[in-house]
Length: 338
Picture 1: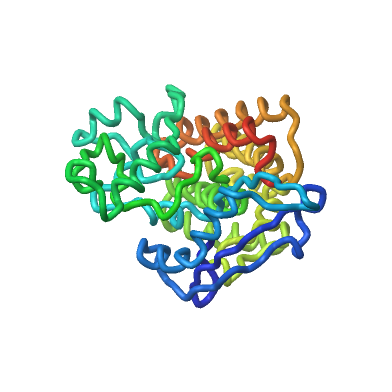
Picture 2: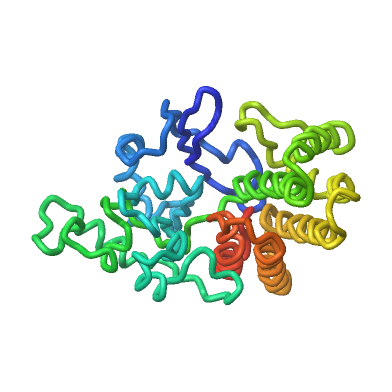
């Protein structure tokens, strides 16, 4: 599921993947395009409602191919705002469907923070706390009309419902939620470009940052030959994100003489690491075990360098995904792009 385009709309796409031809467009079926401007629970529920029983039946009964019944494994992909629309409530602090970690440390949630950690635990490298499918099953039951008092979601404490304040529309093992490479490429590439502008502002003045931003845009257009796509909300498409990472030397040269050498060196290192991570994430094929180990090390170095070198940077869900969930998904299934 994805939201985008102009005007904004939600698209539900079903992919029937042939592993030896994973990129073939003929293997993808567009199920529906639903006009919507927000990832609201009610809208998502209506969109998925007509398909839910078919999904359940497919997973429960499998599919017959050449007279042989085969099991079906369902993967959920799409942007995280869409996933989490099923879960969020007014007091939502850890609504991500694949992870229990809270958004940031707070006095009000100190007890919960100490148990499940926060997105900002990058220096201590505490292990992530994934959600369990059994918990989602419990929340589906607690959201049913026949649920008994004391077992309903509204009656549970936050430690029990863990920010699942509405019944999930269907349950899927959180380990089978795909960290979508395209959205990570778009979000983190844009973040690195903005970081270059922030370097200049922090070392000089706001007006210098504005002048530099125009200079950087011109460098991307003329030297790297990429331009923002209006239908992507004014950011770069996935192919252009990979082009920018490959031409990171050109991007880093734009800040030479404007910031201290240590910032320039850190910028170069971030782009090198991001280029390596992007290539592994996007590859539509199995990844060797040794490369998975290197990916985990690169992800740790990338996020820690960004946080330690530039303390004003907030650890976003995207960075958390790269640090923990991408390596875990790679280790379990051998590929994200495939």
